[in-house]
Image (cartoon, rainbow, N blue to C red; front, side):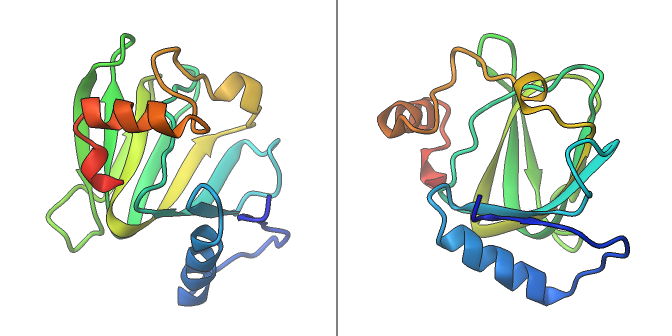
Amino acid sequence: MQNVIKNKKTLTYFNLDIIKKLKKLARNSKNLRSRICIHKNNHSKINEMIIALKKGSYIRPHIHPNSKSESYHVIEGNMIVNVFNKKGKIIKRIKMGPVKSKENFYYRMSKGYYHMPVATSNWCIYHEIYSGPFIKEKDVIFPTWSPKDKHKDGYKHFLKKNKLIRYF
């Protein structure tokens, strides 16, 4: 994928340049997001990414197996992590922002919940850590009640119903 950078180094560190590069990649991508995979490959026991999420990017609600954990640490901007029950009703909205904001800057889920991050500022840059190894077919499960990202009318209706449309 053109909006994914893969790390090949064993000693990794970043400055503001990576944020600028990720924003440029996201701005030019169809799904309005990009990431750098800091881990060496999907077989790594820990998967780490820095993700640039532009306002208007639809990340389909999904769940991970109970044996996997996921955490977000906001670097820049704001987002809401929407947590759903099995029927698709929002049960929690976690407002997030950088450390100096009055919002939560860190979130960790160690049990499988349907969730969906949504950028509420023009950009949200966050660090994600996920229990590896990552096997997409097993580790990302989409509910039948959530529209696919290719069905723009369907997800716009979904966002409106869940009072999220103002972020798109």
